[in-house]
Image (tube, rainbow, N blue to C red):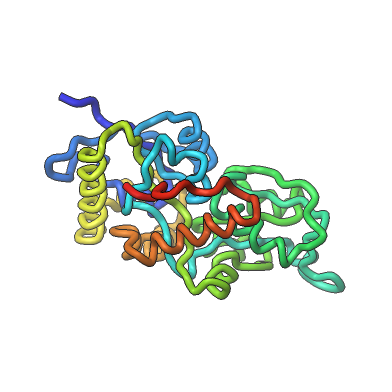
Amino acid sequence: MAEPLSIAYSPCPNDTFVFHAWAHGLVPGADAPEVTFADIDVTNGLAERGELDVLKVSYAALPWVLDEYALLPCGGALGRGCGPLVLTRPELAAGPGAGDLTGRTVAVPSERSTAYLLFRLWAAKAVPGGFGEIVVLPFHEIMPAVRDGRVDAGLVIHEARFTYQQYGLHRLADMGEAWEQETGLPIPLGAIIAKRSLGAERLQALAGTIRDSVRQAWADPSASRAYVLAHAQEMDPAVADQHIGLYVNEFTADLGEEGYGAVRALLTRAAEKGLVPPLAPGALDL
């Protein structure tokens, strides 16, 4: 009997919702995996070191890991109206030079994150003077750091889109909005990857398992409710529902032509600016 696969994903509602059925052995013909919960900066690092069989990582991290891992066509986060936000305190967004981030300290969730890559593409035009220091913080620490004045601005992801006003913060820019206006494409955020050494047949079966897990979650949302809320870091249940509604969509079940096109567009544009290594031909193929 094969060893159970090891997987790492975040404790965020979209991931626990998507993977609930598989993680609990509820997908017919698929063994439950060994689950590790980790922040995206941690999972990106795990992938670069070749640890674990299956990982949720940033699409921006793919150019560094696709030799060892294959991109799966399902289970990830890609969509519209769901991009990262740049937040500041109100006093930094008012008056002369409002919103100018030149020389400012900015907190980001990971230097390999898609959020940071979108931020750098946006900032090349919006902040021609360049930043001061970039500080990497776990995503749930960024808004308190901005609020308390430890950093000047923060690049936030996940449920922060729904809660930043509770911290008294001002939305300076929406990275997803900028991306969609420029490209017309959905926003690639988080990818599911699996080790190529598993072999083509097992990778295809794994993609089927994840699709089944997604479909079970949609068919009976109440089944995953306790699992989602248990790992949602005291998140309000209504916010958890908004989070799932935004980040779990048709692209979660299958990237499709448009989803793959968005991923290629992001990584090609970034490579042209020297922000990531160029993709080898066929690198996104399963």
